[in-house]
Length: 242
Image (cartoon, rainbow, N blue to C red; front, side, top):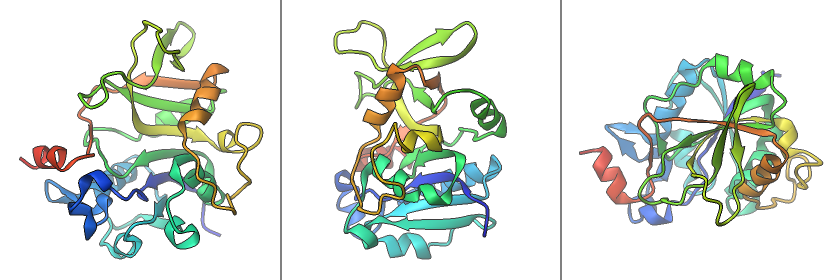
């Protein structure tokens, strides 16, 4: 058997806000500066030492499978649309792909443009040596998410903690970049109630799992200030290609 994958690329979204561009082309294959969005991410993973990547699919999955992907990468697929008739959301999709993933693995979205982000092995080793279930990269809030997602608390004796801030908490929030390192345990009992491998195709978001783990001090985080764009609208795509 081949080695477990060390990364999962989320590519199952329909891209409704990107229509009509995504009516005939899956969002991960839309091009930024002449290169498919997902290829920016795959090449960055490869530079960081990842050789095995799981890609989940739904809309126009055959185009993703048949695309001319960067050479040297072993891509595997979790065909949520084929198996269950639609995407399983982030947590549901990760649990479905978990049998193909390593004990520690990266997760990132195929539709986020981060040309300078480094998926380095030092970050993996640091996270593996910790007791955390996830390590997230947060970014300054973009115009489309001014309220942010999670707080950040600096620690004197270790990595900063991600905070699940209650409504009305005055501490600043930052936006989740979609890039994170995870331990398999977060997607298994007792943290996650979905059966191993998600045989029933349960749809489940990731945020509740993360917030629960944050409340137990089990999620670390850091702020990334390099170029980052959530390519969620045709206008943002056009701006990147200007």
